[in-house]
Structures are given as C-alpha cells and as structure tokens.
Length: 152
Image 1 (spheres, rainbow, N blue to C red):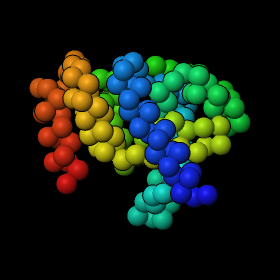
Image 2: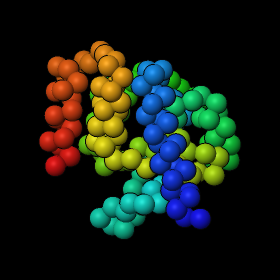
Image 3: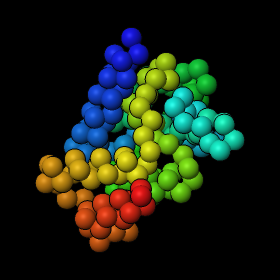
Image 4: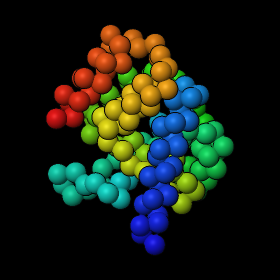
C-alpha cells in the first residue's frame, strides 16, 4: 500500500511539473493570514518539529477541491511560473520551507525541496525548448547553475 501511495504522489509531482511548465501558472490558496500551509510528514527541523510546507497546485480545480476544513476560508490565487521559480522557490529555500505539490483533500501530496523543484522545472522547460522571461537570472543555464551550487 505504501509503495502504491508513494508512486501516486510521485506521478502527481511529475504531472505538476509538466502542467505548470505548459500553462505558466501555479495555483496557491490564500486568505487574510497568508497562504495555505501544511506540516511535513517526511522532514523535521533541528528541533524535531515538522518542517513547514507551502502548498501549490497545477490545476485550479484541484486547488479548489482543497478549500474545506481548516482551509475553508481560502481563495485560489494564481502565481506566474517565473515569479514562482524566482521568488517563491528561492524564498522557500531561504526560509527552510518545503513546496507541497498536488495535495488532495486528505492532505496527501508530494513534498519537494525548493531547489530540487527549481531543477525539475528547469529540466522540463529545457526539454520542451520553452523560454521563460527570467528577471533575476541571466537565463535558464544561470538559474540551473546557481540552484545546483546552492543545492550542494
């Protein structure tokens, strides 16, 4: 059962990467306090507390399906892919927060380290020969190089 579940969320993650690179949009849930977060089930911080996870979706319908329970007062917000990569992922890395992709109504989703997510997005963008307008990096190669260096 565990293996099947991990395959499911890994496939959801791959679909997230493909879809956001096609649409140039990442969806998040936001309310007056901020953005929808969860606690990691995979990673703990140095105090053995679960690491924070900011949740994102590739499809608005999936994001909308999660507006319930403790997220019932949230609204869907769109984040342009370039902004997501350059500001959100870099910021999450700096803050020690994970990116949760494709979470479902049961809070089941893929937890990605932000730099790994950047590298996966760059790989997909390169594979599809797409160009995206970066503001903070010279080009995709520069972004990829800096993410690899930061990732150790």
